[in-house]
Image (cartoon, each protein chain N blue to C red):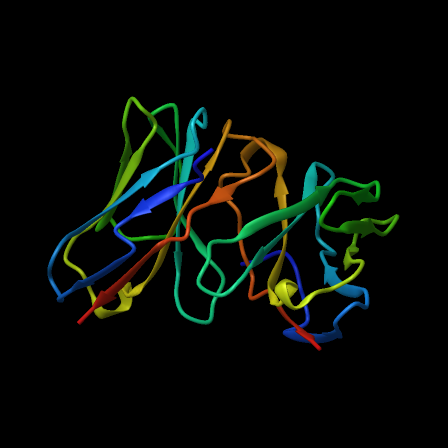
Length: 113
Length: 111
């Protein structure tokens, strides 16, 4: 079975641009979470979506937004990119909102120049 | 802020047991202890979790103290492929989509 897939794997943008990252959860998983991982630090929670509704939001500015589609895939959008947005963006899925295990994708490496 | 404290780094000889400690003195009664690891350039991988009893699976064992204020992850026979950053996380099982990661412990398995 396919794991969590994220696209693209790498992305280079310039300051002020907008970016959309995509995530396909494991088949049957209805919960998707997004994390940002800056080099040398642990992942930081951005959003959680379950059954297409936002169920949690981390301490990130309104430039960050996300949505979940009827097939449970998800997109993370970041507007007005800053240099500090350069990071590995991780998507994780689970069967339910409160499931014990999160399954992570390999992430999208975003570089903002 | 993370609710756990872990050593920054540890070394282990290949084939020996790796014991990774974690302090979580403010853990609540309904919070579980979760362990994930992250191998370079990959997403975190779930290892094991527990509430108050010791747990074992095909990857590792988790020993939780009786007062639940600390725990130890044990990799019984470490291999070079176990070199990774190991994260200890406490979280309510009602919403494990939102995990608070700390800095983790970088485990280096040496030949």
